Image (cartoon, rainbow, N blue to C red; front, side):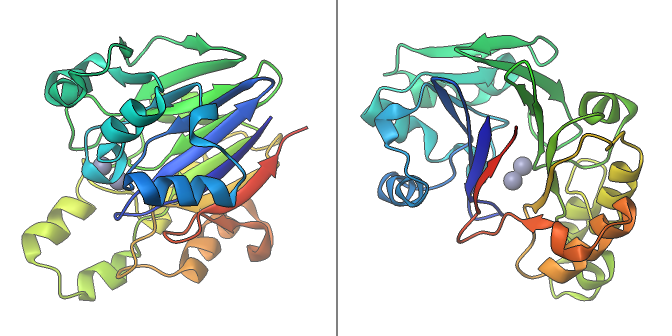
Length: 255
Ligand SMILES: [Zn+2]
Ligand SMILES: [Zn+2]
């Protein structure tokens, strides 16, 4: 099993997970040609994808999905709630499937276990993806952690965890007060310290990979995100990977 990011942040997200003969893309917030170029960097042909999973209807996660899915004949999976607000964008795609945010399902060799998260969208989810031997937990948009989020993520072999902002940098930024409140609120985005607290609450005995994701380009730095997660794990900062906006991160192997 392996996974890679084609970019992460408020300007677009996309993550590929692969096991056996199955390859899926989680979210696509990039345009058609940009997505193909980003996938090419990790050696993935667009038409080789078996499915696109969508976490929620925010543009940085969904805006590239309708055109990409139609162009390359890829089925799309969204929560029923996301479908109610975004379904009309897929009216010309016959292979669009709804799922319940609490129910696991299979796509080829991968088990998809969604879990609902507090975030300001209709029915947002994040995922734990498993090939039966290893589990990858993915959380890119999370207002605040919950016991259910922690129960979902504990014991994973790899984690991609939102480190959106540094509280002090956000407070000192020139963002409008209302935007600061939205980002820092319970249905906004996870700051570095809260990401560290969440990580510290998990069983990380099996953890082989940890990557900070969805970093704000204005209100965070990779070093601050790394320090927060390394502090929680008691590990060296070099061990913490970064899913950045331009390059994402290269394939990470589990095995
Ligand atoms: Zn986002
Ligand atoms: Zn969002």
